[in-house]
Image (cartoon, rainbow, N blue to C red):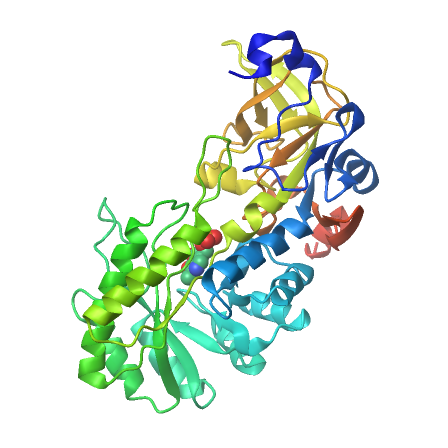
Amino acid sequence: MTLTHIMPSLRSSLPAHLDAGVWPPTARWGADGDLQVGGVSLAALAAEHGTPGYVVDEAAVRDRCRAYAAAFGPDAVAYTAKALLSCEVARWVAEEGLALYAGSAGEVRVAELAGFDMTRVTLYGSAKAPEDLEAAYRAGVGTIVVESLGEITRLAAAAPEGQRVLLRVLAGPEPAGGHDRRFGLRVAGGEAAAAVARIAAQPRLRLAGFDCSIGHQLNRFGRYEREIGRLCEFAAAMHRAHGAGFEQLNLGGGHAVAYRPAELDLALDAFATRMRAVLHLEAGRHRLPAPRLTVSPGRAVVARAGVTVYRVLAIARTQGGERLVAVDGGMSDCPATALCGSRHSAVLIGRAARADVGPATVVGRHNDTDDVVVPDAELPSDVHPGDLLAVAGTGAYHHALASNFHLVARPALLAAADGRARVLVRRESLDDLLARDLR
Ligand SMILES: Cc1ncc(COP(=O)(O)O)c(C=O)c1O
């Protein structure tokens, strides 16, 4: 029972509760509905930089990097760049001691521009284009993840002498439903063993261990534990057959993030302790020296650091009584909401909310019934065009997945820290968009 249950009138006069597990750690209400992140007013940012706008709490990203480094130890954590990347974000990650998982020539280039130590960059990807591999060779990335048999021949022909590689292994059973579209080398049927033999026969390549990716938004440990067991069993067999080294086991990412107050994220410290213990146990059982355990989280490093600010453009009520609040963005800046069904939290900002709070569906501007930004928001009944909304938990896979659907320009990415805001990636202009149309 909360105070607002006992005194319902308070619901309309108190600012919305900011759940500590969902909003950036520096999110605070100022006077008159002024929501601040990193000590910066989101309404002021909207006025200066326009909407929609992505705002990243720099301290929150740095804190998560430090928490990961502390939980897993030095050199054990790589940030998976595809969740959110700009040169500045790469610099924060590097300064906080994390390595980087890059999945394209573009991500490799950003790492270089950010001054990343390229020996700490891993290139992964189920279908690497020739230019991805060329960028990796030229930049001197430390490690390349092999994800198909054909790739071994390509790497053996062109990779720098002594290129360190990991093998992406699919050791577990197929996911339910029988549509296993994952890339990687399957242990069942001997494909993974054949890959180890092929790599061992290539003097240019040095197999350093194994890599896997077992899912997304996982907050339980069981699947990771079983994967460690299966990978150790496979590694032991490869050690016996080829004397193949096993110095690193990358357990991937997929660590869950809470988007709503009732949701659970992955308990990081307990997870790290448990995974280390299981690895020691399993490696010991197979008489292998325990390899270095590494992880490559994306979402869990940046999701909670991000907030998107929208302006309300229109209000409608359906025949069924559903209140639709349409904002100036949508599936072009938050496609993950439609793709993955992530359900975010939203609040009114920029003015004191005096009216009662009620259910609302925040929808986008793309003339598509799937264009939902927040499916079940709780917003004051007097929300009207011109108001500002802040949506929590948009740090991962929002800026990264943004598109120009409807020929809408992509929002700016801003960083807020210590009362100052900086533009990391400027807003796209219509001229930017039209410059690519050769008319
Ligand atoms: C090896 C590896 N690590 C990490 C990730 C990122 O996943 P998440 O953002 O859920 O942590 C992926 C995604 O495909 C991956 O392949």
